[in-house]
Length: 68
Image (tube, rainbow, N blue to C red; front, side, top):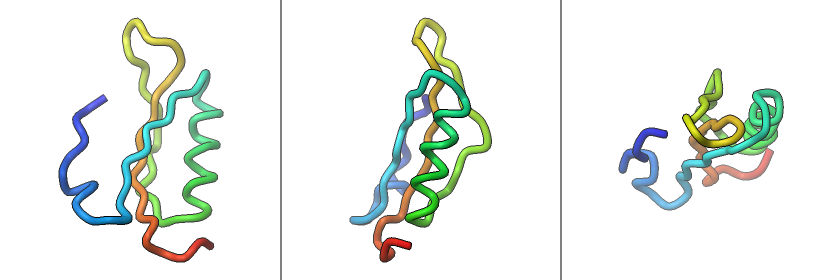
């Protein structure tokens, strides 16, 4: 995956979450669960890393908000 940019973690409460899962549906379901609770910049697709099992997905969270 690409390098985490400083802007994505520049303040307390901002987080980058990398999800590794067996398949697209699982990775997207985890992202959906996170997005249901916090402000989330979601990914619209997963990636596959050559030589690594499963799929990867990265999303960006702002956990400074109260839980929904």
